[in-house]
Amino acid sequence: MYWLSYLVIAIIIGGLYAAQKTPFSFTQIVLIQILLIFMAVNIPGLGDPRITNTVILDLAGRPIYVYHFSRFYTFLTMMYIHADFMHLIGNGLVLFFIGTALEDRIGKKKIILIYFTTGLIGTLSHYMVNWGGITLSLGASGAVFGIMGALFILYPKDKIPMFLGPIFMPAVRVDLSVAVFIAMQTGIAIIAPQGVAHAAHFGAFAAGMLIGRSVQRLDLDETRTVSDYSSLEVLVVDDETRRMYEKIEEADQEEVKEAWAEHLIANSDCPKCGRSLEKYKCECGFRLK
Image (cartoon, rainbow, N blue to C red; front, side, top):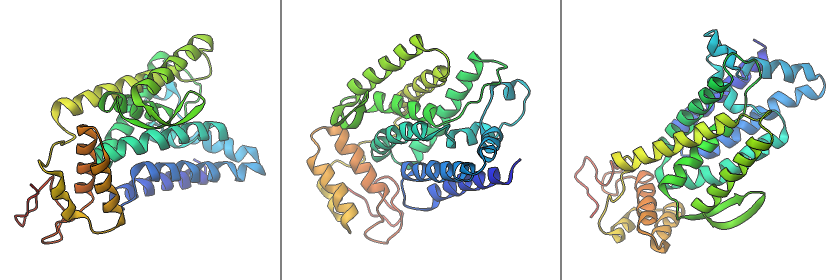
């Protein structure tokens, strides 16, 4: 493996560590990672394109790898590398809008689970359709479609900034935007079936919907943690927590209030002892109403 490929892997591992140990959102970290990796892979290639090609060959996936039970690390590394600048921008912009929206509502741990699980399922879907193939597979689009599927199931009526096709709209209903986006992808798959991993997109989207439904059924999103939202004001200690509390007050829909309440609690310490809150209570005996 080329030495630059190890640098890319180090950036991936470093980002995963940062996601666990820092207050930065997972979506922010992934966006920074894919940008850093794109520069690390492509800037040296300006002088010698063989460098970029070597790294992509090292880290991109191929269906034949599963057939031969080899290079399983590419299931992870392929999600962080992109073929060109437009590929990067396309995935990055959609991830920024839908990833931020979903993470704000369900928290970092759950979006990490959805991101990597649906990304894996999307890749496997593509590999099954192209069993034994040697075409390179790379990019975060599978995981992006997985997040889109989960957001579609969990918060279909929410209005968030999104791209509705090629048009940016500051406030559009999730179900409408996703429905149009999927319809466009279906049309593209029919008109131009080659060159794009359509099976990965649709497989990851379906997986995202299933996981979103499981979140609802198993109550993994831990909604309705408090009965009186005004009791959360005790957690307001800085500008960031004030912003979250104001989001609760401004929200019209109960499910949005609950999502922001969960986000505020997850990012707050016990006002009595300073330890992390567990749902709506603390080991010291403090409990939100």
